[in-house]
Image 1 (cartoon, rainbow, N blue to C red):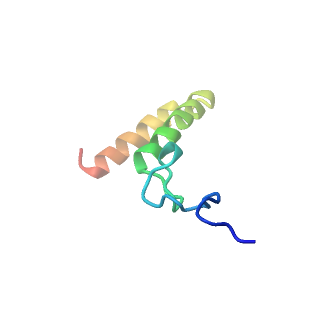
Image 2 (image 1 turned 90 degrees about the horizontal axis):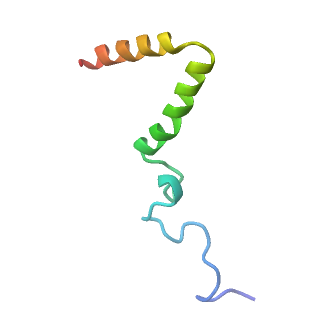
Length: 68
């Protein structure tokens, strides 16, 4: 027996809409959503392991490389 239109829609039924946490049907995520997920964890790990000075120094170096 096959499912008609009233059957449950499978994966990819809404290809142009963003899902939970900005994940699209293709599995990609908006860069700002990814950054919002990673930055708090990175800050927590830097504080827990005492590497905050290195994080600040690296961020300063990256900002200098980008021309800011």
